[in-house]
Image (cartoon, rainbow over all chains, first blue to last red; front, side, top):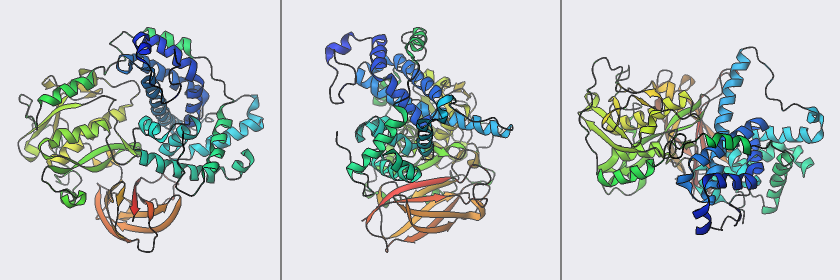
Length: 190
Length: 360
């Protein structure tokens, strides 16, 4: 049985979705995509704990909607879209919480904590995530789907519910802005 | 899979830097296993119920669409009474943003066959408030303009990529009726699915309120009157929609609480424009000043300001002509914003609205 989502062009065969139920599809997609979806969400929300919650929620939602999806390819497309949408909501929710926290006299914001904060890798990661955070939401989403998940313009358009023309313009603006924000860091990271 | 080149002259090879950077950034992260938690939660789901809460809404909408031709007038709803709240704005304006005359003429989209009309459709977009509503004019079938416009809003079928719907996926409006004239009329909106009574767990209260206002503003705009609006389920007034109390007919919320404080009308997203570009829109911006920028990629190639007819208590129209004749042909973006005299020191920064356009 082909892995769901393996090969974008490959339609899931009749035999596959005739036998696959919601639980099995969750399991298969989890095995193939859990890591990359959590990492995608980290690019959007910065925080690993939030990203894990977002992707868990997306899987649960996908399971609940299985009778409408029925095919692993559609389920994967739904998952991606749900992860992007829910990351956006999480971010918005967090912005409210942060504003509130600041008004209250403010605790430190979101630090991923831990010993390797000091390490070079963590510092770089923070720089890149910070640069992504400064992009407008749509640009950040297009950049992450295109350069991290390697989705085609059509797939990105589908996941975000926008036209391929809009994907192009967000991608080019986003890439230019990201390069500007990263500046010298990008040279170092090459 | 072939990548398209970004428009700004970066070759395909130079995209690899971004690809590598993103992978370097997160590939080292090893997420906690989540399968057990997912399984525990999916076990709570009852097949066909619970979280699959909009199941079948789409099919129902399609089935109904075949039967409901044109504008259905639904009977039986309660009439608005004097104390149903402000169906008219304090200033006495009856058109949605004080701009009925500002709606684009039929010539703007070419085909004045008489079969379609321009309808103001309200979508959600990011703003300093988190999310606000933005208006986009779309052409709809003249005979079905109310239902068509409401469904464009609910489905989020916006030309502008920055806009979206706040309604849950699969939500639809089966029929819209309007009886009477002006504010004496009542808009009646039949929802596709009883599951739309409740606010989904992922939706905030403000998002639910704004989702409702998407429909209120859109339909009031189409009929050109601040008529109250009643949501119906199975022909009866719905007690709640998305968790918002709706037993009584609803009025529009004040513009400054729900609408983006700047909203471009022209150019339209993706439009091919003339070198004398006429920019129109509505805004409530400090001292009626609406800063405008023309961008090519991330570079600002032209700046100007428009002056709106007013500011502070509602949105006011503005119009200005920009001379683009010195610019080379190509793809540009127009960005309009509210003026922020504090330079970002106060509040959450300016409202903005942007449209991509092509200069041939």
